[in-house]
Amino acid sequence: MNVEVTPLPGIGTRQDFMIRAGRRIGVITHRDGKFELIVSRKDDPDDCSASIALSPAEAGTLAGLLGAPQLVAHLEEQHRDVAGISTRQFPIVPGSRFDGRTLGETELRSRTGASIVAVVRAGSVHPSPRPDFLFEGGDLVVVVGTADGLAKTTEILGG
Amino acid sequence: MHDTAIALVQLGAVFFGLGLLGKMAWRIGISPIPLYLIGGLAFGQGGLVPLHGIEDFSHISSEIGVILLLLLLGLEYSAAELMTGLKRSWTAGLVDIVLNAAPGAIAALVLGWGPVGALAMAGVTYISSSGIIAKVLGDLGRLGNRETPVVLSVLVFEDLAMAVYLPILTAVLAGVSFLGGLSAVGISLAAITVVLVVALKFGRYVSAVVDSPDPEVFLLKLLGAALLVAGVASQLQVSAAVGAFLLGIAISGSTAENATRMLEPLRDLFAAMFFVVFGLNTDPASIPPVLGLAVALAVATTLTKVATGWWAARRQGIGRLGRARAGAALVARGEFSIVIASLTVASGAVDGQLAALATAYVLLMAVLGPVAARVVEPLARLVRKRGAEPVAA
View 1 (cartoon, rainbow over the protein chains, first blue to last red):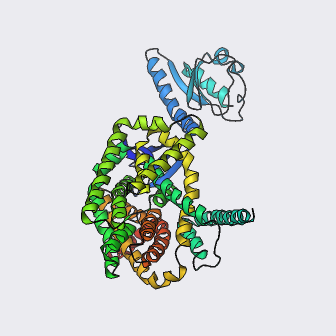
View 2: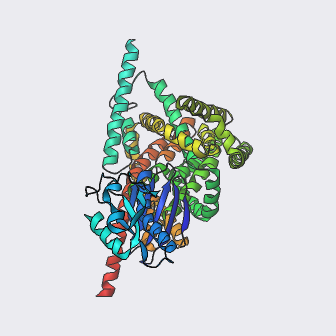
View 3: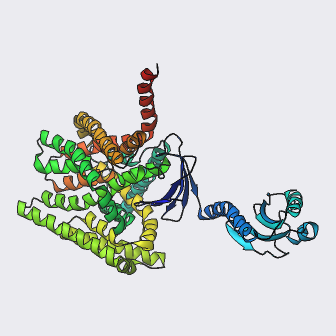
């Protein structure tokens, strides 16, 4: 990807790239540590239809959300040689059944044979979480298992 | 005690009133500078209520206001940014100087203010207000726009030009000979070069001298250094403001960021006082006679700034709408035009009408700038639509 880096004197740096849909998308990093997410207009690529101010914590969270599929793809790659095993991510919806409960309480392994290999929270990855790991709304749970096991996982974690 | 009580009440009333004006200004989306000027005009010389007992304080705090304005301007840039900005924008910078200094200079010559007046007015109409422009670009969500770096690098060039221009103006105003003027130019150019080199190579040492983890110590050292440098600079016939600007450039990295954060409220306080004092010293009765000229100058220099931005953006391959936005963004004049006018008036070397003209001009441009930046897009779209319709029909 060709990311263009443009200094903004007195303000910070703009980093953006063209996406296939024909828009510029990128981030302005302010000197004081704030971020701005920018998306260019469709009819005027010079202009921005959105520039959204993000705190460092918010930017980290967004990065985590966008980064999770990356993690899944990475694990997928590792498991490619093992026939029948795949990786998928499941969100813990705030207020859902497992929001505020531990990993052990899902009894996922005994019920589906699939295992939780990582949890992505607020932009950071918690690898190999233990049974006493407490889920929070907004977590992304990365699960490895057979197609059948993952289908059952959807039923359990989705509810 | 009684005098102190009156002075405190007056000062309190002035600051509180400025606070209310500032709040009102940003709410309706314009810069507070014209309101501060009007506030100053309303009081003092020839105004409604004369203020007594706070002249000394207001005078020195307006001086500090100018020093902080330029110190923070210098802090905004690292020397490296100035160099790349300069390399990228020098052609646009030159077009900017020619197009926008000319109207002011011509007006001054027509009015018979002589070459010194022409030099001062050239500066007044040339220099955009980076304070207003940065704020407006942020408010309108245009920092991510492609034409914004063009606008910013023109501003960087202007700020550097100020660093060269102010010492020359101070020297000329002091009535030095041609040779003396040349040596002043030489001294200021040498000083700027030295500071840039020092900032590029040894910026961290300068930063280390003023830096401190303790906010109180940091603030005292920073303000102390700024006033010291400004004082010495003004003694050397280089303006105090330029000294502060160069100190700001030499301070870099996280020290500069902390300094900016710490000094911003102080600058806003003292700079507001600066505008009020300028207004106080201007007789409101002197404005109406020059109002027509100020309007003409405002119209002319709005067009020339738009042309500058359009030209600069076009060179960077920006589309028509973006060019229009870049041009309109540059229109605002403000703090530095008033700094130039106040230097000029304080010297007494130029016709007193200059202050009135500069005030009226900045009143117009500080309001017109943000408005132009806002309306340019709908206006340009409208024009484009109108232009397209006959073809479609």
